[in-house]
Each structure stands twice: as structure tokens, then as C-alpha cells.
Amino acid sequence: MLSKSIVALAVSASGALAATPTGFEPGSDTGLLVTFGNVAAVDGAVVAKEITQTAPTIATESKLDGTSFAVLMIDIDIPTDNPPETNTLLHWMQTGLTQSSSSVSLNTTMGSQASFVLEVPADEAAFAEYIGPAPPARIPLSHRYTQIVVDTSDVSEEGLDALKTAAATRLGFNAETVLTSAGLADKVLAGNFFNVTNPGPVAATNTTTSGGNSTSSGGSSPSSQVPVPAAAVSQRVSASLMAVMMVGVAFFAL
Image (cartoon, rainbow, N blue to C red; front, side, top):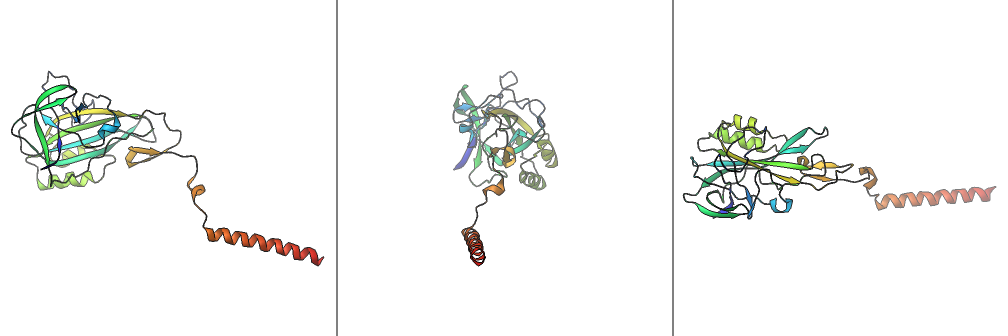
């Protein structure tokens, strides 16, 4: 039984999908159809945040060479304190994907496609569990979420260890550096990206958590929000009453 299935449809060079975004390395000229339910999230399309909170479905139009694969998803538009400079955040790294030997008909908003599904065995834990997109109210408001599929059929134990170690640090994730260290920089088979956009407006003051994946804002300083213990209040009242009594005694003594 499968814990999840991922569908990435690799189209031919004449297809309409755009593969990885310009400048992303290691990139791919082979596009992927990444779907959430029946919604195709491809070619940089803007997708509603609400439908992206669980891992997408993936397949290839033709059966891939290889016996084991990995998928990575990276946000390449994490806000920084020096806009328009951006950072990156790893949203997902799943190894151990296998592929069905026969195709199935995949119905999406792009139509019906015969596809070979990539599947994740139920006992295969992710190196980095899927985190759904949640761009904060900071510049840039629209984030590009990039997916790549990597052939891991011949990866060494050292290579897998390199992937697992790198996945532990999501913020500032550099796919090219990581895959090179694992001996997989030339094993990227296909890619895709989609956008999720925060409607704004840009927050005047905010703090970012999860490496820029969500935000909270407020006008009060942390110190003004610290509650005063009841015992301290009682001591202050007692001290005030004692002061009043001392003034009264001094008055009658005059």
C-alpha cells in the first residue's frame, strides 16, 4: 500500500511545459506536470495556497530509465532583510520513489494523459517531510516553488547520507551544491515550477518564521506583553497602603 503517489508528467521537447525556472541549477529542459488533485500546477502558473498543503501527485509520459528516484521541492523566493535579494527553502525531499511498469490515464485540468506513476512506498520516510507553500506578506509576495526528479538508482550510501544531512537544514538549501556532494548533479531527469502568491499588502512590520514560509506581525514590543504575577501586584498594593499610613501618622504627630 502506498503512503502517497506523486505525479510528474515529463513531456516531449515540443510540449508546452516550461521545466525549471531560468537560472535554477541543476535545471532540466524536460517539463513535469505536477498535480494537486486534478489541478495541474505547471509552467509557473499561480496556484491557490489551499490546494497545495499536501504533497502533489507525479508520473512520466514515458517510463524512466532507472529503478529508484528522488523528488526535491524548493522555494527560491524566500524574503530577506535586503530585498530584492532572496534566499531558498527546502520544502520536500523524498527518496525511494519507484515507477509502475504500466501507464494509467491521468485526468487533470490540462486534459487526460497516459502516465507512468511514481510511487512512494509506505515504509519510506522522507528526508524532509513535505511543507505546503505559505508565502508571507513580504517582498516578494509571489514565490516560485521548483520541483526536480533525480535518478538515484546508482547512488552510494555516502551519497544518500549527504542528501539526508543536507535535508536537515532547509533554509539556504542549494540544490546544485547538495546534489554535487551526493554525486547526482548530472542525474536530474525533469523539472517544473509553480507560483503561490500572498495577496498582500506587504506588512509594515513583521517577523518571519520557518525560513520565510509564514509571518506574524504586531505593534507591541515583547516586554509590554509579559503578564505581571498576582503576587507582585499584591506586594505593590501593600507597599502603597503602608506609605499612605505613614503619611497619616506623620500628619497627626505635627
